Image (tube, rainbow, N blue to C red; front, side, top):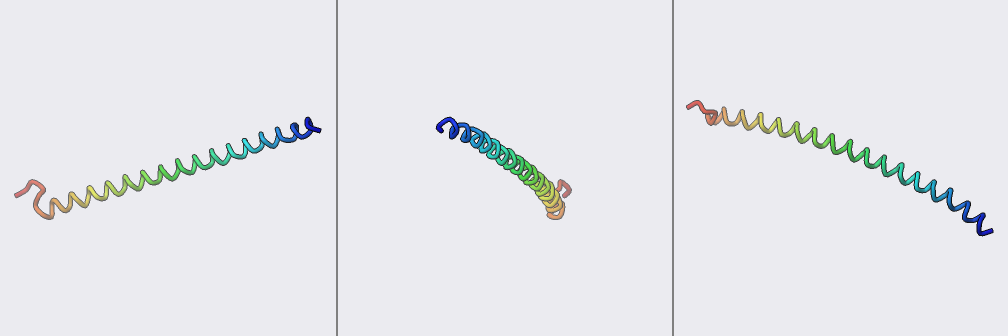
Length: 66
């Protein structure tokens, strides 16, 4: 009876490990996707800010032309 119980636990343990592993990989992929999107947005904001700062410098005559 103990052998039967142990033989049933092992497949369930392996199944649990596989399921947990699947969700871990899925979660890491989603985190990577979100992080890439966040960095792309950050780069876009940085470019926009640099453009606005350049326009401000020209507008306030700090562009080197006096």
